[in-house]
Image (tube, one colour):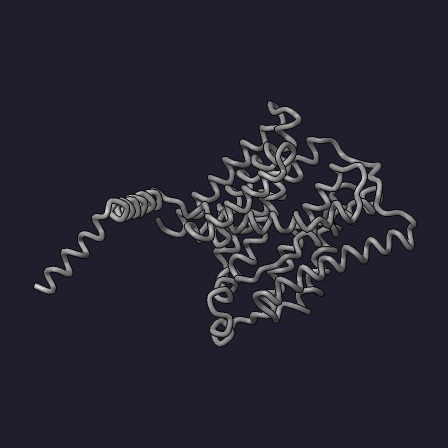
Length: 338
């Protein structure tokens, strides 16, 4: 298939998924719509995270910081700026924080970058907690104004579809090629004329804008928000896990994994939270060992490879347990001596 055919295919798949999700509130129950909202939230978060981190190989743990900033921006500005204005405000503030954070830490890579982004997330969370307690005399914010359920759902759906659409577009631009070049070999990309500093900063800011907008849109699901709720590190960690297990370098991997994780979260987390966390760990281990490309890399050839490897392993174990392996070694030694 040519590049244009791939583009048409990706857009048709995106439109089909968006149409199905658009019809869901009209026939689904409250539980189904709530689960779909969580699914769409992680589709947007993991797709935007994979767009920058999966391509450039920078492991960011700051998603929960941008999500919380967007939630607080919506709580403070929804009465004054309205629903659309508060979402834009959350995205703008998160983008500004990302630019400042990225200017400070994007020259680092690997463990140092991951630890520093997580440390800055905790710094922001504790700073807001201190400000709320010391200045405002409270711990959180009450959201007295909230739009209808369908408005929230359509907004989150629009953000998720826009994020996946932006990922389709960016991967076919020079900016996307520059991010891929940074992930492959940053020094070589610099020698080829790529301004790696500005490319990384723009990619990091794009991820933050999506997370801030999603945080603003999802904040109204709670009547009361506080730093512990909206700056929860679990939001950032689960976003990273979804992207890695789905396939951080692929387009549809985060979307597939977000659907799987949302179903698991709603069915297991409330009734058996330990089982849910164990399932996350097992999926991550299996993905690292047997699916380095994530769930999106699964093909029929993958299953055939697993089948052939299992048969070979079982044949070797059976020969070892039956003593045939030792007898074959003894016959080989006898022939050598003879």
